[in-house]
Amino acid sequence: AARCHLALRERDVPLWTQTAFCSLIDNGEQIQGAVVSKDGAKLRIKAKRGVVLASGGFSHNPVLRARHLPYSSQTRYSVAPVEHMGDGHIAGIQAGADTDLMDEAWWIPVYQMPGAQLTCGMFMERSFPGSIIVNRQGQRFLNEAADYDTAGRNMISAIAEGTGDMLSYFIFDRRFRQRYPAGPLLPMPAVFDSFLNRDKRKLIVKAKSLEQLATKLAIDQVGLSRTIARYNRLASTGVDTDYGRGNEPYERHYSDSKCTPNSTMAPIETPPYYAIPICPGDIGTRGGLITDDDGRVLRTGGRAIKGLFAIGSTSASVMGQSYPGGGATLGPAIVFGARAAAAAAGANLLAFLDKRS
Image 1: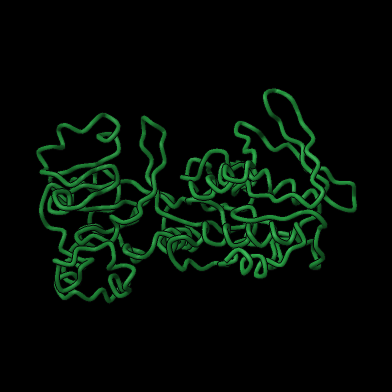
Image 2: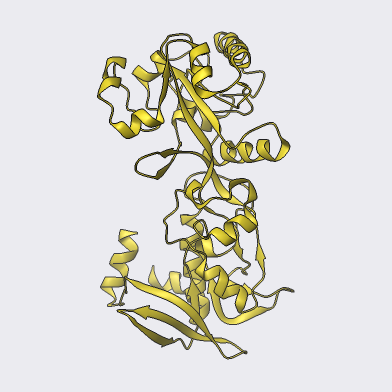
Protein backbone atom coordinates (compact mmCIF):
# COMPACT_ATOMS: atom_id res chain seq x y z
CA ALA A 1 0.00 0.00 0.00
CA ALA A 2 2.83 2.38 0.84
CA ARG A 3 4.55 1.66 -2.48
CA CYS A 4 1.32 2.30 -4.40
CA HIS A 5 0.88 5.56 -2.48
CA LEU A 6 4.43 6.58 -3.34
CA ALA A 7 3.79 5.88 -7.03
CA LEU A 8 0.85 8.30 -6.92
CA ARG A 9 2.90 10.99 -5.16
CA GLU A 10 5.74 10.65 -7.68
CA ARG A 11 3.27 11.33 -10.50
CA ASP A 12 1.40 14.14 -8.72
CA VAL A 13 -1.84 12.17 -8.73
CA PRO A 14 -4.27 13.69 -6.20
CA LEU A 15 -5.52 11.31 -3.54
CA TRP A 16 -8.67 12.45 -1.74
CA THR A 17 -9.45 11.15 1.72
CA GLN A 18 -12.68 11.75 3.65
CA THR A 19 -14.48 11.63 0.31
CA ALA A 20 -17.57 9.43 0.06
CA PHE A 21 -18.68 7.79 -3.18
CA CYS A 22 -22.36 8.56 -3.82
CA SER A 23 -23.30 7.31 -7.29
CA LEU A 24 -22.19 6.77 -10.85
CA ILE A 25 -22.91 9.20 -13.65
CA ASP A 26 -24.70 7.03 -16.21
CA ASN A 27 -26.20 8.37 -19.43
CA GLY A 28 -27.72 5.02 -20.28
CA GLU A 29 -25.03 4.17 -22.80
CA GLN A 30 -21.87 4.41 -20.72
CA ILE A 31 -20.52 5.45 -17.34
CA GLN A 32 -19.26 9.01 -17.57
CA GLY A 33 -18.03 9.64 -14.04
CA ALA A 34 -19.01 9.62 -10.39
CA VAL A 35 -20.69 11.78 -7.79
CA VAL A 36 -18.77 12.11 -4.51
CA SER A 37 -19.26 13.97 -1.26
CA LYS A 38 -16.32 16.03 -0.05
CA ASP A 39 -16.22 18.69 2.66
CA GLY A 40 -20.00 18.72 2.89
CA ALA A 41 -20.55 19.30 -0.82
CA LYS A 42 -21.43 16.92 -3.64
CA LEU A 43 -19.09 17.00 -6.60
CA ARG A 44 -19.57 15.52 -10.09
CA ILE A 45 -16.31 14.09 -11.40
CA LYS A 46 -16.28 13.48 -15.15
CA ALA A 47 -14.28 10.50 -16.39
CA LYS A 48 -13.62 10.29 -20.12
CA ARG A 49 -12.09 6.82 -20.04
CA GLY A 50 -13.93 5.09 -17.24
CA VAL A 51 -14.54 4.59 -13.52
CA VAL A 52 -12.87 1.84 -11.50
CA LEU A 53 -14.86 0.66 -8.48
CA ALA A 54 -12.55 -0.54 -5.70
CA SER A 55 -14.64 0.14 -2.61
CA GLY A 56 -14.21 -3.19 -0.82
CA GLY A 57 -16.93 -5.70 0.06
CA PHE A 58 -20.27 -5.48 1.84
CA SER A 59 -19.40 -7.02 5.21
CA HIS A 60 -20.95 -4.14 7.17
CA ASN A 61 -24.09 -3.64 5.11
CA PRO A 62 -26.79 -5.26 7.29
CA VAL A 63 -29.29 -5.67 4.43
CA LEU A 64 -26.89 -7.26 1.97
CA ARG A 65 -25.33 -9.41 4.66
CA ALA A 66 -28.65 -10.76 5.92
CA ARG A 67 -29.75 -11.45 2.34
CA HIS A 68 -26.60 -13.20 1.12
CA LEU A 69 -24.85 -14.54 4.26
CA PRO A 70 -27.71 -16.02 6.34
CA TYR A 71 -25.48 -18.24 8.51
CA SER A 72 -23.31 -15.29 9.55
CA SER A 73 -25.84 -12.53 9.14
CA GLN A 74 -24.73 -9.95 11.72
CA THR A 75 -22.24 -7.25 10.78
CA ARG A 76 -20.56 -7.72 14.15
CA TYR A 77 -19.20 -11.05 12.87
CA SER A 78 -16.82 -9.30 10.47
CA VAL A 79 -13.29 -8.04 11.06
CA ALA A 80 -13.39 -6.07 7.79
CA PRO A 81 -13.22 -2.26 7.94
CA VAL A 82 -16.56 -0.73 8.88
CA GLU A 83 -16.50 1.26 5.63
CA HIS A 84 -17.19 -1.96 3.69
CA MET A 85 -20.83 -1.12 3.00
CA GLY A 86 -21.12 -2.47 -0.53
CA ASP A 87 -21.39 0.98 -2.15
CA GLY A 88 -19.65 -0.25 -5.29
CA HIS A 89 -21.84 -3.35 -5.44
CA ILE A 90 -25.03 -1.31 -5.19
CA ALA A 91 -23.92 1.22 -7.81
CA GLY A 92 -22.80 -1.52 -10.19
CA ILE A 93 -26.05 -3.44 -9.83
CA GLN A 94 -28.03 -0.26 -10.46
CA ALA A 95 -26.03 0.19 -13.67
CA GLY A 96 -27.04 -3.31 -14.79
CA ALA A 97 -24.09 -5.40 -13.58
CA ASP A 98 -24.31 -9.13 -13.05
CA THR A 99 -22.96 -10.62 -9.80
CA ASP A 100 -21.48 -13.88 -8.57
CA LEU A 101 -20.34 -15.49 -5.30
CA MET A 102 -22.53 -13.14 -3.27
CA ASP A 103 -23.12 -15.93 -0.72
CA GLU A 104 -19.37 -16.32 -0.16
CA ALA A 105 -16.86 -14.63 2.10
CA TRP A 106 -13.30 -15.05 3.28
CA TRP A 107 -14.42 -16.97 6.35
CA ILE A 108 -12.64 -17.17 9.68
CA PRO A 109 -13.44 -18.14 13.28
CA VAL A 110 -13.83 -14.93 15.27
CA TYR A 111 -14.21 -13.90 18.91
CA GLN A 112 -15.63 -10.67 20.27
CA MET A 113 -14.15 -8.58 23.05
CA PRO A 114 -17.22 -7.79 25.20
CA GLY A 115 -16.39 -4.32 26.44
CA ALA A 116 -14.60 -2.95 23.39
CA GLN A 117 -17.21 -4.43 21.01
CA LEU A 118 -14.23 -5.49 18.92
CA THR A 119 -14.32 -8.53 16.62
CA CYS A 120 -11.02 -10.35 16.17
CA GLY A 121 -10.01 -13.18 13.85
CA MET A 122 -8.50 -16.42 15.15
CA PHE A 123 -5.74 -16.94 12.59
CA MET A 124 -2.99 -19.13 13.98
CA GLU A 125 -3.63 -20.33 17.53
CA ARG A 126 -5.91 -23.10 16.26
CA SER A 127 -2.83 -24.91 14.89
CA PHE A 128 -0.88 -24.99 18.14
CA PRO A 129 -0.92 -28.33 19.97
CA GLY A 130 -3.21 -28.83 22.95
CA SER A 131 -6.40 -27.12 21.80
CA ILE A 132 -9.68 -28.09 20.16
CA ILE A 133 -12.95 -26.53 19.02
CA VAL A 134 -16.23 -28.05 20.19
CA ASN A 135 -19.95 -27.41 19.72
CA ARG A 136 -22.65 -27.25 22.40
CA GLN A 137 -22.67 -31.05 22.55
CA GLY A 138 -19.01 -30.89 23.54
CA GLN A 139 -17.98 -32.56 20.28
CA ARG A 140 -15.35 -31.75 17.70
CA PHE A 141 -16.77 -31.08 14.23
CA LEU A 142 -13.87 -29.80 12.12
CA ASN A 143 -10.12 -29.77 11.58
CA GLU A 144 -9.12 -26.95 13.92
CA ALA A 145 -5.71 -26.42 12.29
CA ALA A 146 -7.03 -25.82 8.78
CA ASP A 147 -6.44 -22.46 7.13
CA TYR A 148 -8.76 -19.77 8.46
CA ASP A 149 -11.02 -19.75 5.40
CA THR A 150 -11.53 -23.52 5.50
CA ALA A 151 -12.07 -23.51 9.27
CA GLY A 152 -14.66 -20.73 9.05
CA ARG A 153 -16.31 -22.38 6.04
CA ASN A 154 -16.56 -25.66 7.95
CA MET A 155 -18.23 -23.83 10.84
CA ILE A 156 -20.77 -22.34 8.40
CA SER A 157 -21.39 -25.77 6.85
CA ALA A 158 -21.90 -27.34 10.27
CA ILE A 159 -24.56 -24.74 11.12
CA ALA A 160 -26.30 -25.31 7.78
CA GLU A 161 -26.21 -29.08 8.29
CA GLY A 162 -27.36 -28.91 11.90
CA THR A 163 -24.14 -30.37 13.37
CA GLY A 164 -22.80 -27.04 14.62
CA ASP A 165 -23.98 -23.96 16.45
CA MET A 166 -23.47 -20.25 15.91
CA LEU A 167 -21.42 -20.31 19.10
CA SER A 168 -18.55 -22.78 19.43
CA TYR A 169 -15.73 -22.97 21.95
CA PHE A 170 -11.95 -22.93 21.58
CA ILE A 171 -10.71 -25.05 24.50
CA PHE A 172 -7.17 -25.40 25.87
CA ASP A 173 -5.37 -26.17 29.12
CA ARG A 174 -2.68 -24.63 31.34
CA ARG A 175 0.16 -26.11 29.26
CA PHE A 176 -1.19 -24.41 26.15
CA ARG A 177 -1.83 -21.19 28.08
CA GLN A 178 1.80 -21.01 29.16
CA ARG A 179 3.30 -21.74 25.74
CA TYR A 180 1.12 -20.30 22.99
CA PRO A 181 -1.05 -17.28 22.19
CA ALA A 182 -4.83 -17.75 22.46
CA GLY A 183 -7.10 -15.00 21.25
CA PRO A 184 -6.09 -11.87 23.22
CA LEU A 185 -3.86 -13.89 25.58
CA LEU A 186 -0.11 -13.96 25.19
CA PRO A 187 1.83 -16.99 26.49
CA MET A 188 2.83 -16.52 30.10
CA PRO A 189 2.64 -18.31 33.49
CA ALA A 190 -0.96 -19.01 34.54
CA VAL A 191 -0.50 -16.90 37.67
CA PHE A 192 -0.62 -13.87 35.39
CA ASP A 193 -4.32 -14.52 34.74
CA SER A 194 -5.05 -12.35 37.75
CA PHE A 195 -3.58 -9.37 35.93
CA LEU A 196 -5.87 -9.63 32.90
CA ASN A 197 -8.06 -6.59 32.28
CA ARG A 198 -11.81 -6.74 32.74
CA ASP A 199 -12.55 -7.20 29.02
CA LYS A 200 -10.32 -10.25 28.76
CA ARG A 201 -11.70 -11.73 31.99
CA LYS A 202 -15.22 -11.39 30.55
CA LEU A 203 -14.16 -13.21 27.38
CA ILE A 204 -12.05 -16.04 28.81
CA VAL A 205 -13.83 -18.84 30.68
CA LYS A 206 -11.59 -20.64 33.19
CA ALA A 207 -12.31 -23.71 35.32
CA LYS A 208 -10.51 -26.18 37.59
CA SER A 209 -11.95 -29.22 35.80
CA LEU A 210 -13.51 -30.13 32.47
CA GLU A 211 -16.83 -30.75 34.22
CA GLN A 212 -16.77 -27.29 35.73
CA LEU A 213 -15.78 -25.79 32.38
CA ALA A 214 -18.71 -27.52 30.68
CA THR A 215 -21.06 -26.20 33.35
CA LYS A 216 -19.82 -22.65 32.92
CA LEU A 217 -20.20 -22.91 29.15
CA ALA A 218 -23.61 -24.63 29.42
CA ILE A 219 -22.47 -27.43 27.13
CA ASP A 220 -22.74 -31.22 27.48
CA GLN A 221 -20.37 -32.44 30.23
CA VAL A 222 -20.30 -36.07 29.13
CA GLY A 223 -19.82 -35.10 25.51
CA LEU A 224 -16.91 -32.82 26.35
CA SER A 225 -15.20 -35.41 28.57
CA ARG A 226 -15.52 -38.09 25.90
CA THR A 227 -14.27 -35.74 23.20
CA ILE A 228 -11.21 -34.72 25.23
CA ALA A 229 -10.43 -38.36 26.06
CA ARG A 230 -10.61 -39.37 22.39
CA TYR A 231 -8.62 -36.37 21.25
CA ASN A 232 -5.91 -37.14 23.81
CA ARG A 233 -5.64 -40.71 22.48
CA LEU A 234 -5.31 -39.42 18.93
CA ALA A 235 -2.73 -36.85 20.02
CA SER A 236 -0.59 -39.56 21.59
CA THR A 237 -0.49 -41.44 18.26
CA GLY A 238 -0.06 -38.29 16.19
CA VAL A 239 -2.78 -39.33 13.75
CA ASP A 240 -6.12 -37.52 13.72
CA THR A 241 -8.31 -40.19 12.17
CA ASP A 242 -11.39 -38.00 12.75
CA TYR A 243 -10.47 -34.80 10.88
CA GLY A 244 -6.90 -35.16 9.61
CA ARG A 245 -5.44 -32.39 11.74
CA GLY A 246 -1.81 -31.75 10.85
CA ASN A 247 -1.88 -33.61 7.53
CA GLU A 248 -1.32 -30.48 5.42
CA PRO A 249 1.91 -28.41 5.32
CA TYR A 250 -0.13 -25.22 5.78
CA GLU A 251 -1.49 -26.54 9.07
CA ARG A 252 1.99 -27.38 10.37
CA HIS A 253 3.34 -23.94 9.45
CA TYR A 254 1.78 -22.36 12.56
CA SER A 255 2.40 -25.34 14.83
CA ASP A 256 5.15 -26.29 17.28
CA SER A 257 7.87 -28.33 15.58
CA LYS A 258 9.14 -29.48 18.99
CA CYS A 259 5.87 -31.30 19.61
CA THR A 260 5.91 -34.87 18.31
CA PRO A 261 4.62 -37.01 16.68
CA ASN A 262 2.14 -34.40 15.38
CA SER A 263 3.21 -30.77 15.73
CA THR A 264 -0.43 -29.59 15.82
CA MET A 265 -1.66 -31.99 18.51
CA ALA A 266 -0.94 -32.52 22.20
CA PRO A 267 -3.09 -33.91 25.04
CA ILE A 268 -5.39 -31.51 26.89
CA GLU A 269 -4.91 -32.73 30.44
CA THR A 270 -3.37 -30.04 32.65
CA PRO A 271 -5.79 -27.93 34.72
CA PRO A 272 -6.97 -25.25 34.86
CA TYR A 273 -8.87 -25.40 31.60
CA TYR A 274 -9.82 -22.44 29.43
CA ALA A 275 -12.37 -21.64 26.74
CA ILE A 276 -12.93 -18.78 24.31
CA PRO A 277 -16.40 -18.52 22.71
CA ILE A 278 -16.04 -18.21 18.93
CA CYS A 279 -18.36 -17.99 15.93
CA PRO A 280 -17.96 -18.01 12.14
CA GLY A 281 -17.13 -14.59 10.75
CA ASP A 282 -15.19 -13.08 7.87
CA ILE A 283 -12.31 -10.82 6.96
CA GLY A 284 -14.29 -9.61 3.94
CA THR A 285 -16.93 -10.71 1.46
CA ARG A 286 -15.92 -12.62 -1.67
CA GLY A 287 -18.84 -11.91 -4.00
CA GLY A 288 -19.28 -8.96 -6.28
CA LEU A 289 -19.64 -7.65 -9.79
CA ILE A 290 -18.69 -10.02 -12.61
CA THR A 291 -15.80 -8.73 -14.71
CA ASP A 292 -13.78 -9.80 -17.73
CA ASP A 293 -10.01 -10.29 -17.95
CA ASP A 294 -9.46 -6.54 -17.93
CA GLY A 295 -11.80 -5.72 -15.05
CA ARG A 296 -14.67 -4.50 -17.25
CA VAL A 297 -17.98 -4.95 -15.44
CA LEU A 298 -20.33 -7.28 -17.31
CA ARG A 299 -24.08 -7.33 -17.64
CA THR A 300 -26.12 -10.53 -17.51
CA GLY A 301 -25.28 -12.25 -20.76
CA GLY A 302 -21.67 -11.12 -20.77
CA ARG A 303 -21.83 -7.72 -22.47
CA ALA A 304 -19.57 -5.09 -20.89
CA ILE A 305 -20.92 -1.91 -19.32
CA LYS A 306 -18.99 0.75 -21.20
CA GLY A 307 -16.78 2.83 -18.95
CA LEU A 308 -17.20 0.74 -15.79
CA PHE A 309 -14.53 -1.40 -14.16
CA ALA A 310 -14.35 -3.19 -10.79
CA ILE A 311 -11.45 -4.73 -8.89
CA GLY A 312 -10.68 -6.11 -5.44
CA SER A 313 -13.55 -7.12 -3.20
CA THR A 314 -16.02 -5.08 -5.28
CA SER A 315 -15.62 -7.71 -8.00
CA ALA A 316 -16.45 -11.40 -7.75
CA SER A 317 -13.26 -13.12 -6.59
CA VAL A 318 -11.14 -14.67 -9.33
CA MET A 319 -10.33 -17.38 -6.76
CA GLY A 320 -13.93 -18.62 -6.71
CA GLN A 321 -14.57 -20.61 -3.55
CA SER A 322 -10.93 -21.55 -3.03
CA TYR A 323 -8.31 -20.11 -0.70
CA PRO A 324 -4.82 -20.64 -2.18
CA GLY A 325 -3.00 -18.72 0.57
CA GLY A 326 -2.03 -15.31 1.85
CA GLY A 327 -2.53 -12.45 -0.62
CA ALA A 328 -5.52 -14.04 -2.36
CA THR A 329 -7.31 -10.67 -2.30
CA LEU A 330 -4.49 -8.12 -2.56
CA GLY A 331 -2.62 -9.88 -5.36
CA PRO A 332 -5.57 -9.99 -7.79
CA ALA A 333 -6.57 -6.44 -6.81
CA ILE A 334 -3.16 -5.16 -7.95
CA VAL A 335 -3.11 -7.29 -11.11
CA PHE A 336 -6.62 -6.39 -12.25
CA GLY A 337 -6.18 -2.79 -11.16
CA ALA A 338 -3.29 -2.53 -13.60
CA ARG A 339 -5.24 -4.32 -16.32
CA ALA A 340 -8.29 -2.12 -15.78
CA ALA A 341 -6.21 1.05 -15.93
CA ALA A 342 -4.51 -0.09 -19.13
CA ALA A 343 -7.82 -1.08 -20.72
CA ALA A 344 -9.43 2.23 -19.78
CA ALA A 345 -6.49 4.08 -21.30
CA GLY A 346 -6.68 1.97 -24.43
CA ALA A 347 -3.20 0.59 -23.85
CA ASN A 348 -1.73 -2.89 -24.10
CA LEU A 349 -0.53 -3.63 -20.58
CA LEU A 350 2.20 -6.09 -21.56
CA ALA A 351 3.57 -3.68 -24.17
CA PHE A 352 3.48 -0.89 -21.59
CA LEU A 353 5.39 -2.99 -19.05
CA ASP A 354 7.93 -4.04 -21.67
CA LYS A 355 8.49 -0.39 -22.51
CA ARG A 356 8.92 0.51 -18.84
CA SER A 357 11.48 -2.27 -18.31
